[in-house]
Image: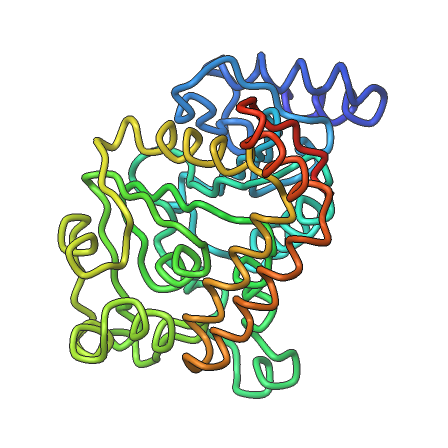
Length: 310
């Protein structure tokens, strides 16, 4: 009943719907999709945009110059179904084009799971042709193609596709209860969204081979020691810490941030010489921006820069 009423209000008045979503999220009667675990974001208050209300499987919030995306299938441990990944791809594409957004935080509803993997029930009966003709999982790479920095705030399970999604992000912060793994081998398959590639580059061949061939999980502490994650925090503060870092990044010149990300990725994806060429050209390009003039001018004049993001 509550969901039907909400749907009518969304169609009639998006602004009123936004208010109702915020209210419903705090009421026990709001089950299913509206049980959005908004409380998982421990910094308050939170206001979701009217556009975010149109999603079924994710929540999107804009807060100043950052955006927060929450995978919102808590009853399924945020398993990555096709519908969720389609919404995530669309949201990331829109945020990448939004001039008012400088960084993105990606997390899961609750603290039990970032994402416990792909939705096995959804894919179990698919054939080779089902995947081959649609180039299955290729669209999942949007997070890795997004130009703006993405910080993954991982609490609980990040397994299979969940681990792969986290590795597509630029920085991974883990809660002390986080668990990472590529267990596809245990169900007669292998990783299909970058697990054999990004994991190997992140932690080395031997450790990656062990995880992929045995399905072994590693803890947040082990992941930090191996270089898979940047930092480990108490699970209740993981999202807050990711938001703090995103706000620092978003406070910088956007062109410089994009160039810096591109240059670091070149080190990850290409040869040393090609990476050095990419870095040098990006450095030269900084001097064609208004923000370089503003930043260096502010330094000389001993004042805080005022970025134009141009």
